[in-house]
Length: 260
Image 1 (cartoon, rainbow, N blue to C red):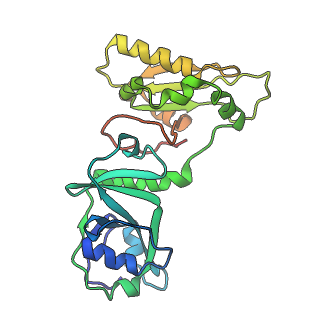
Image 2: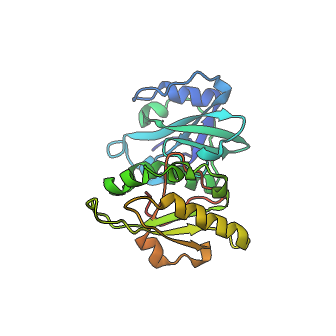
Image 3: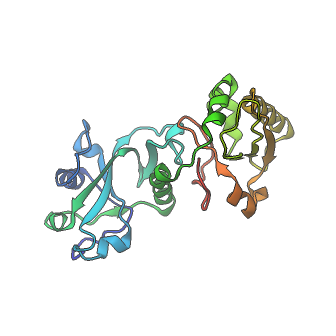
C-alpha cells in the first residue's frame, strides 16, 4: 500500500480520524450514537495484506469501538464471543464483533489522517484471538449440551463467585450423539492458581462436580495448575467457552488451544 501512513495490524485512530475512516467503509456502517471523541477504529488486516498490491488485496479491514468508563469482567480477555472490552492506550474501549468493516485502499490513501498509534502486543493478541474464536469455536454434541442444560448448577456456574479463582476449564468428551441409555463421561481440567489454599480447592472441585453431574453425564473433575497442563492435554482438550462464562485472571487466552 503506497501510503505515507505506517499502517500495521493493531494501528488505531480516534476522534476525527476515526470518523473519517468510518465514512468511507464499503460495508454497512457500524451504528454509533457516540460522540466523535469516543470513537476508535482499529486495523485488523495482517501486515502482509496491508502492503500487498491493491489488485491482490484491495481492502483494509477495521473494527470500530467506543470508549467506556469501566470494562466489564464478562467482556474481558475474550470471554464473550460478541463483545470485547480492552485497554487501548490509556483508555478502555468496547468492541462488537458486528462492527467490523472494510475500506478501499485507494480511498483511504486520499484521506488526510494523522499517524496512527498502535495497540500494545498483549491487548492486540487478545483482540486477534477474540476475532478468530468466532470462526474456530467447536461444539459439544447436542445430546451432551441438552443434558447439561437441565443442571441448574451448570447454568449458574459461570457467574458463581467460586469461579473467580478458576483460570480456565478444559473438557475432553466423546464427540458422538449418544442414546439416552449411554452416559457421557467428560474429563474436565479446572485450572487454578498455584497459591490457592486447600479449602478453596475443595469448594471448587465440589461445585464443579455438582454442576456437571446430571442424568446421563458422569464427569471426572481434575484440579490442576497452569504448570501441570501438558502439551498432550492441549492437543486433546478443548477450552470451555460460554457466552456468559466469567473466567478470571489478567492473562490473555492461551496460545495453541482449541476453543469451545
